[in-house]
Length: 323
DNA sequence: CACGAGGAAAGCC
DNA sequence: GGCTTTCCTCGTG
Image 1 (tube, rainbow, N blue to C red):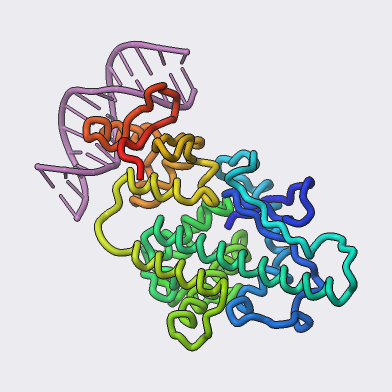
Image 2 (image 1 turned 180 degrees about the vertical axis):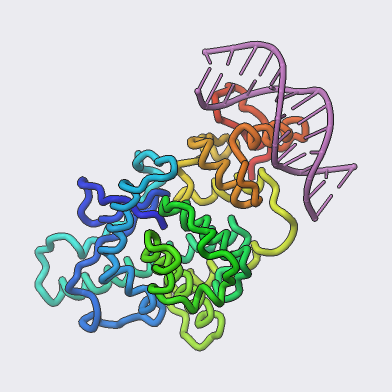
């Protein structure tokens, strides 16, 4: 959920995310009560479309001024970074009523897409950090992991110490003012980001509680959660599995690792430091770097799991048994 | 300077 | 004991 400054070349997709996803611009006049059917699932994410559009941009602004981590190059586009285009948001020759209908429907679609992506992000983060999606269930260690993750996303300075000894319940009960007291610099971002997680957990609760009726996109979201649940079980993850996971999510990681030839299992690590950081996060190894990660990859050579492709290239590897 | 190959030892489950 | 993690030497472009 790291948001970057809008790309001047696009009007329909305003907010371009660091990880390749694109948030979609919203028109102010469609917020609040004049929206046709405020979806149950969407209502808790209204903040993403209304007053918080400004917040998102602010976050991206601050990421350029308080740059503590390595920058990721801007999205080079395109095959891995699909653009969410909304036909209703541009100038339209249609009659007002029809236009309104189209706009409303496309807004709904866009909202569903964005909510889906938010859920996917949270699901991915949970897998990476090995924590549950519901902040209320976190212990102190989980809270620290989440903070580390959030710092990483928004390139915030390290604030973990200020939140030591807080578990998830403590964190959830904190107001923005409480956040401000502990971290004047990052309170807004942390509070808002936690709010998204809380909302998502609330949504999940409603979905699994069965009290809401499933429709179209929300079924997809439900499936997402089920997948997340099933993947939370079992053995500690292997590096090759982790790499596969990243490769399966080009939306999120296409800019740090991607397939060169999916059929042959050939992939390229585009940002070695970033992949190593993610691996370190997943395994709780803050000192992880590409030197060590690549050594682990090389251990796979003799096991016949990963090898160098026939034409050896820097940072390019190949799964011996592509799926 | 960043990667790549692989030995060696230690840690962790 | 298997799978890393850490550290290291040496080689390459």
